Image 1 (cartoon, rainbow, N blue to C red):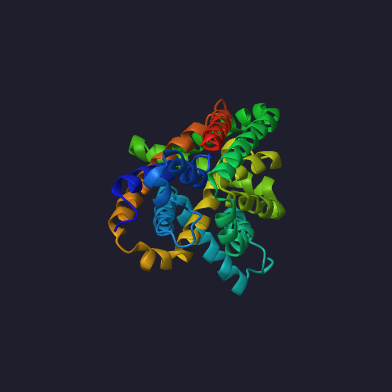
Image 2: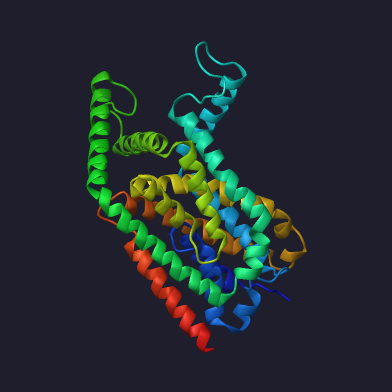
Length: 347
């Protein structure tokens, strides 16, 4: 008998795709939604059970979400991966007058910062994921953590307001710098800036230039220790109800990053972490846990990937406006966490 219906897979897949990227905790929703619905849903979708088929489904969702993120940022990942291999080449055969183990340029530095930031949460995940999931993935505890997540987001926004004017000036300066660069390209007749370039191509080039400007600020303001600390902040997301992206965004804002830059670094960190979590659990997806539910897993994973891509597209645009804040997400988490806590406590 199937332990995961198409209805359950579809609903959870859509929610996972949205909440994995939104700073509202996907794991928290994966625990709370079945608990609130109750009945067969609570039985089928119990993430705290050691041998639950739901675990195999979550692996599929992780892979789908990471794939959507890599597709969305594919230009950035091509640039970063190229820089990583170039840095390896530099280490093997350094250029005269340069240090063997010192990355050259923003892209190489960013590549190694992502690797460094991934280490603490990777080690913690291997050591603590099972313990945290089986002990803390209880609905009432999860509701409490979701409430705390909302408080974290509101605290981050309060800290960010101190640098709101600086953030607005940086966004305006970036747009001006990119516009001047494109005008120079028109004058020189270079690709991406010439008269015959399509509007869509020019827009993509503008986004690429803005991404480079953002990466330069991230590298300059975060540093190696900051990257390690931002990566370590993801460990909190092992607690269901605490958002990985939310904690990194808030930690980045406390570090001096703008909300937009903190979100970008968070998204770049999330892809390898989520993908690694999925890959390490592939035996659950291909083993006996998935017996009889491969169809629902595939169906829900496809929906999850589509939802994640659209959610990421929305968030990048939303957070690019200095007037937009994390406050709505914080209020939602506190309200949802408190509401679920009350409902579940009264049952």
